[in-house]
Image (tube, rainbow, N blue to C red):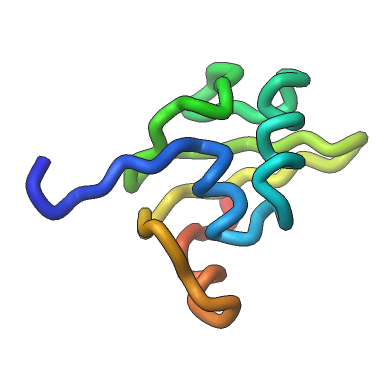
Length: 85
């Protein structure tokens, strides 16, 4: 797909600042606490625009829809990479 980027789930979680560090994102995936489109996802899973990601930390679940996928972002831009649903 020209112009559309796929990114590893662990890197997307870090770049979008949903999870602060990539190692923590990888651990969350390994523990089965991250789902993409209603399936438990590995850290190496590809993330595309439109995917729904659910992150479980304790009793809290964060559910977001991917709106932008890019390799890097500044802190101010990171919140535009997803919408909370």
